[in-house]
Structures are given as structure tokens and as C-alpha cells.
Length: 461
Length: 81
Image (tube, rainbow over all chains, first blue to last red; front, side, top):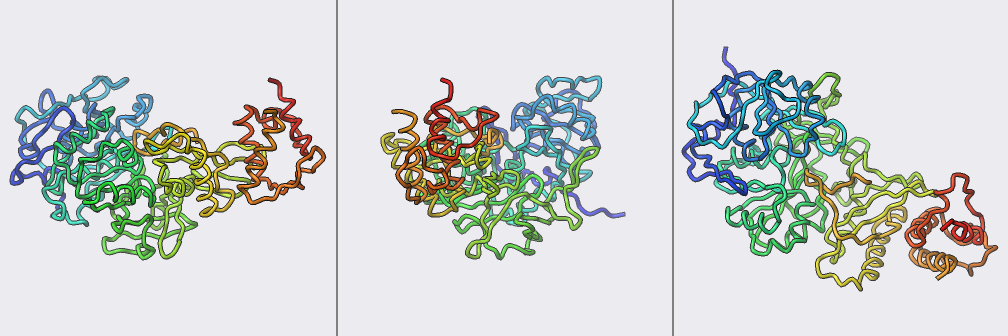
């Protein structure tokens, strides 16, 4: 019986492409001869068909082990760095994990219950493993304070957008991402580097932005991705001056016009694109015309086999790039009866273009009238002196809630101008938004927190 | 500046922002004659909480919402320091 050809990461890593590397702040590993080396310590075990938790301290080790295990193990659960250790036990059970690959002690994960294998840089020659199956890639959802959900993908689905864009289009480029590659947005960039024949420069937690940019320059990074919050942080830092990538990609949050324009001004030589993707819905589309939102013509079925529709204001996506299911006993259904993922991202049609207005769950209710924080932020961010903003609800004894805006001003803004700026912000909001969406109070703050997943922190919202 | 003058100043500012023409403010003026809608009052209460450090309408469980400007001002004046 013939089986359809299954490709794993190793099948994109032939020795014919020289000079390919993957690096973090401390190490540079050659991808050219990676397949002949092992990143697993101890006796060489047969991991064929195992269910593996991949919990390494660094992204680099995870990247190397993903390359080694994909196509061999049954499933591979990627542990992002901010995963709370209290959640590990429950996730191990839900994902039916039998083997743990790690380079650090994990609470409750002793060798008696699980096979525990160490991870290391690939210094030793090892057996070249063969692709036997389509490994299930398990990723965790972000943005919830409780137990994250486990989302199952295949490499075929994860790489759908990479293949559709034509890997050759970005051949021999050096990618970087502000994301962690164990999250969906970062994994996309890892796959673009591996499948597209390029190199990758990883981010490093806690690294000063100037040092990070210095590494991006030293690594000759040409293509780079992050969330709008990541990019605002870079623009605010003043560290971007000597960095000149060819391609800048935004995803993971709403790319408003202000951040797109800011990037176009700061990186005149770069093309700037924003993509829509989520852990569950996969990559929906990317937009390269420099405008926020997306053309209404994308609704329906496009040539890449991605089908989108809008029901009750939220974007629904059906494609082979979406996740297959949530994993675990009693897990909710990820796809509706027709195979669509309800993204929970709300859109509005204005002038032939759909604009993202916010998350369904993030709505602020002002005496029965609804506000998405993001639509208020998009207006505030257009002010030239504003670097970043966050709209949040505050309890009101009269209307239940009102909108408060926290605003970070651009470096060098004279504190004496704050009252003028406050009035200008309110005036812009009044001009663009109905009265209940205009912030009741504008607070100037030094900084706004960004989560480990690169998104504006809304935890106190 | 007294609580009263801070309240009147905030009301004038919100009236300007909301394009409301505020009548002369005095104790017997009914709140519904100020031209403020519930959103304007919600904004006023939020800003006064920042300015004066209290929100008498949320703090007290049995707080009745005032009906005149005078009652509104007294709610702030009566907040224990």
C-alpha cells in the first residue's frame, strides 16, 4: 500500500545549502550539517511513536530537538517559556505524554513516570533519523490565566502559508522574530527559515533592545517579524537607526495605521506587511499594501484554499492551515460543523475594507453600549506624540464602566505639553468615535507592559 | 481649592468637551437640568475620584444618587478624610 509522501523538517535540511545557521545570543549552530548530529543526550533511544513534551530552557535547544524529532515521534508538545509549572502535570496527562526532553529539572516529572531525555547543543555525531510519520505538533494557547488549551497541528498545516508564499521567494534570507518560536507566531518564522532555506536569529529573554538590534545587524537579518507591541517598543527605543531589514512583518495583534506608518517612516527600504494568524485558525492571510485592515475581497475562498466569512461580526476561517482539534479529555470542539474556526476577532466593514476592532471577549460595556479597547487605541495612536496606548474599562457607579486611556508619549515629549496633547487626543477621539467610546480619563504613563507572547498586557482590564 | 470649586471646574471642562452649555451652577439646580447625560456624569465621577481621591457613590452601599447640584457636592464634602 502506498502512502502519501510525508515531509518532515529534516527533509528541508539537505547539505546542499551552505552557510545556514540558527543562533541566539550565546551560540551559533550550523544548519548545513545538522542532520548528522544529535541534540539528545545519553544513550540513543528509539523515540519512534513516542509522545514528547519538549521543555527546554532556550529556544535554540527546542529548535534543534524539533528538527530531530519531527517525523519520528507521534506528537510533540512545545512548552513556551512562560508556562506556569503548576500546569505541567495536567498538560502531560491531557497530551498523553510518555517522554520528556528537557535540559532542566521539572517539578513532578521524574524519571520513574516518564522517560526523561536531556537536550544539548549538537556537538556529537548521531544517527540520521528517518521520517516515518506526520508528527502531531501540539501548541498551547496564550492569553488565558488558567490552564492553557492544547492545540494540535500538523507540519503540513503549519507550513501551509510558507509553502503558499513560495519558499523560493525568500530563499537564502536571514529571518528573525521577536516572538518565542514555541508560540505560533514565532514557529511560523522558524518554519520559514528552515523550509525556505534560510537562517534564523532568535530572540533572547531579558536582552536589552539595543543588544538585540546589534545581534540582528551582526547576523545580517533581512526578514523580521513581531507583534505591533514589539515593533512599537523597538520604535520607542531609538535603537532601530542602523538596522535596515528588507521585510517587516506584523502579526498577533491589530496592526493599526499608526504603527504601519511609523515602520514605513523608520524603515524606508523595507516592505511592511501584516498577517492575520492565530494558534487555532492558523495563518489566514497577509496584507502588503501598507493599510490597516484587509480588502473585503479576501472574504470568500481564495486561491490558497483559505476560506473566510464573517458571522455576527467575527471572522471565521476554514483552511488546511487551521488546527485540527483541541487535545485532552472533554476538550471543546475547535471547528464548527462546517469546519470553520471562530476566531473571536471582530471586524467592521468601512469603505470596502474590513478593519479589526477587537476581541469578542474584550468588549467594554458602557451603559449597554459596546466599545472595543483596540478601536480607541487605534485613534489615539495616530497622534504624533503617542508611542503606545491602552484603553481599559474602569467601574462606574453610573454607566457600569467607562473607558480610561493609558498613554505612553514619544521620547523627548515636553511634560509641559501634556495638557495640550490630552486635549488633542480627546478631540481626535470625539471626531472619530461615538461619545461613549471617547476616553473619560487620559492617563500618561511611563510604560505599558507587554506579555511574554508579545501582546499588550490587558490583565488588569 | 474646595471640593465645590473643583467639582464646578470639572463640570465646566466636561461641558466644553461634550459641547454642553452649562447653566449657572447653584445648589438647587436639578442635575437633569445641567444638560449632562449619564455618560457625562460617569466621566465627572471618574475624574473627581482621581482629583479628590474618592467616589462617594461606589464607596457607600446605601448611597442614593443625588438629584441636585447641592446634594452632589455634599456627597463629596461628606466623605470622611
